[in-house]
Image (tube, rainbow, N blue to C red; front, side, top):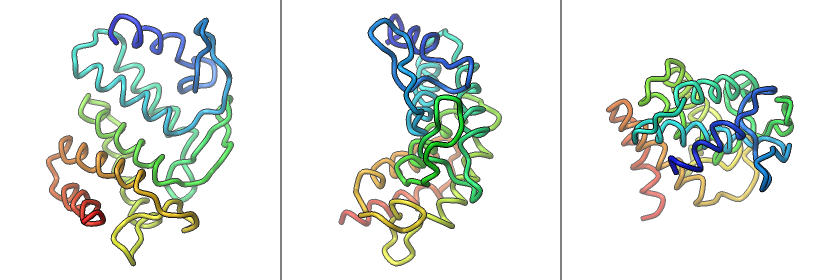
Length: 189
């Protein structure tokens, strides 16, 4: 991880021209120029934050800030959520506000906050406000798949939201995040 994967993705994986990270690399480490999914951008931020916490001496702080700046600058919706997909140039390809993508963003922001990123806490709080206002299903204690309320509800977004809520509790110590996690657990009892 420290010798091959992180050095590759911290160099070839970074889109210095358009921002964020490349969605995929070819076998020769060149970018495949695919649309950028928000979950991929968030997972890269998360990976660099965790690598930093585990002692990686690469430019994690710069990469975390680079990813968050791209996500926040290009990937927010008018309602305060996060888009599903961006084009290579950073323009919006799919503005769907998806619960799974939001779980990835929340997890990344929690770990970025723990690594000292100055924007992560505010963005996390804004994302929780969006989640409560637009994705929470008041009828069933869980969350809608998308903000339009369409689509079959799946366990995968809920599992990843549980992980994100627990990470936010770890990052802040706030019991509200444990209550959120307990609501997810209750869905599976």
